[in-house]
Length: 97
Length: 97
Image (cartoon, rainbow over all chains, first blue to last red):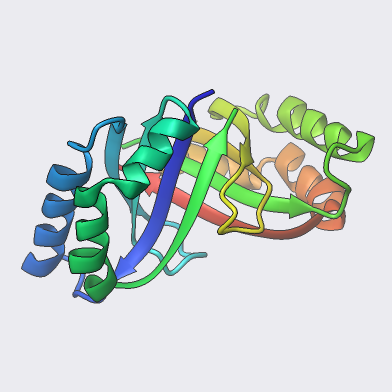
C-alpha cells in the first residue's frame, strides 16, 4: 500500500527571501533524488488557519521504502545540516487510502 | 490556480466503530456532492508523530469555488450538525503549487 509522506513547515527566513528559495531548491534537489521517493512536490500552505507556509509531499511504494528513505545518509545529512537550523516549526502527516 | 483543501482530524468515536464509519460515509456523500468539489478523498493519517487519525482532501478550481463551498448550505449544515459534535480536534491545511 502506498504511503503519502507530508510535512508542513515554516522557515526562519523571510517569505520571498533568497534564503527561502535556496532552502526549497536544495530540498527538492536532495530529497527527490533519494531512492524510493516518487511524486516529490513543494507546495505553499495558504490557509490562514495555520502558521505553516510550505509543504513537501512524497509517495513511497511501501513502509520498507519509507524506512529506507528515513535512514538514507543524504536524508539524515539534510535533516541535520539544513532542516534543523532553518525550520522554525513543522508537522509531519502521513496518509494511506 | 487550483487549491487543494485538506483537513486532518480525530473523532470522538472509537477507532473502527460503527459511529466512525457512519461519520466518514456521511462526509463523503455530503461533501463530495457539493458543487465545485473535485477529487474528494478520505484518508487515514498514520504518522505516529501526530494524533490526527483521518484526513479529507478536495480540490477547487479557484478561490471562488472554494468560497462557494464554504458558504454552501449543505456544507454549513454538515459542519454544525455532524462535524462540531463528532470531531475532537482538527487542523486545516490548504495547498497551492
